[in-house]
Image (tube, rainbow over all chains, first blue to last red):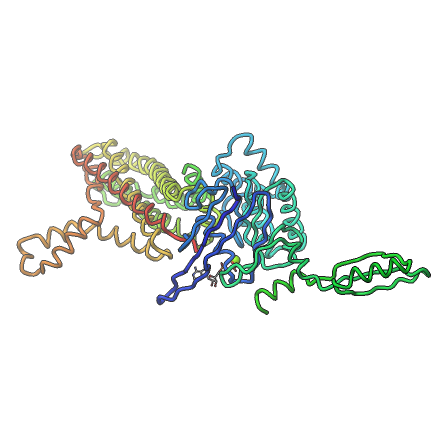
Length: 287
Length: 264
Ligand SMILES: Nc1ncnc2c1ncn2[C@@H]1O[C@H](COP(=O)(O)OP(=O)(O)O)[C@@H](O)[C@H]1O
Ligand SMILES: [Mg+2]
């Protein structure tokens, strides 16, 4: 069973004056359990639209999707999901602690388990001190951390995060990356959207690139990085100790190494020279 | 559902609505002295003033709380974080309604106690010919509360179709005003005097409107409380049944509409 299974998902918004916007044009995508998938696309590509469909906030025009085998049309599909909306807002007349209690109860948690988990996530996200203050007094970064806390609270199997790192300072971004990596270690499925290639390179197993409502590429991150290999940087030490660095194409690599070995020189390192994820992304979205 | 209800109540309290009402309740202190200005029928006037003040406060609450509670969630984008929880939309709408209804009940209880105190003071200072029948006063309060709870359901239904607060707030006010005159208009267009003046089309339109717009006349027991006249039990039962049916239909329609609503 897939953690997420999206089949032919399409969404057409009806705007004013009969104008329509085809925000999603039939997306097919499956995400395995335990997999971290980066949903990469420029602004307006259709990332949030896809995610809102999955969370039952908007209805797809065509197609269907399931979360851990449960149809997204039912509220039950959301029981095993933690969702972080884009630029989230939470009832600001509650404190972080009260909000987490509210969310926990919505997931059917109660009693000791709920208060223990609240304490854990509040401490993990450094919200323990201000937990009794109303959310309306929080900074943007703190609100984002409340968002992450309510995602982690009920320890779901699937995490759907809409631009979790946008608008955060470097410390906040590092924290989010750390959390995603931790979830990966614990075998959870994380599906997160972003327009920043670096985020994908650092934490994802696979990447799905979306542009203009269509999936362009779905592949493993290392495949993409390998595909972009332009050559190898080879460092060779001569007998007199001087180090020579050469950039060689893949076809010549074997020859260069065996020549060097035959000449009694030692290979210090061989590094692939590759296009960055960013260059790859810019290629796909056509810039 | 209970969860949403509690959050709704907390929101109302945190926004200091209740404190505002308590401030308005200070007006009850002036009821005995204001009523004594009339020199005669001081008790009757106290009852009238108290019930009118309570009605007015409940009207404000039902229009503004009822009309803005869904709109605010959508406007401030709370709807994304709340409706993506494993809650049914129906629980959300019902929770909201129950939270608001409970708050109305609480308000009318507190204000009712304040008005009882005011009336008791008036009637001891200026003993009335007819003693106050407290039971009738209580009935009048209960039915006034039901009336405005029904109006909350009207406001919620209008909120589920609208993307702004304009329709819910003004729609609810119009519904309230129309419900006050619908009976007269209906009787007029069906009277022999109007037979010539009113076209059959208009007559039909008025008839349809008459059945659609809530009929709130039966909820008004002010006169019974003022003059100590026993209300007709059959009428009371009918009004209660009317309240339950009409509110259930409004809530059902709200849920149907809100289930289809997209959080864009
Ligand atoms: N409510 C809406 N009405 C009309 N068009 C919309 C609406 N929401 C999004 N769109 C359009 O759908 C496209 C995808 O938007 P979105 O999914 O928000 O992109 P992003 O990838 O930045 O999250 C955009 O072209 C946007 O203009
Ligand atoms: Mg977006």
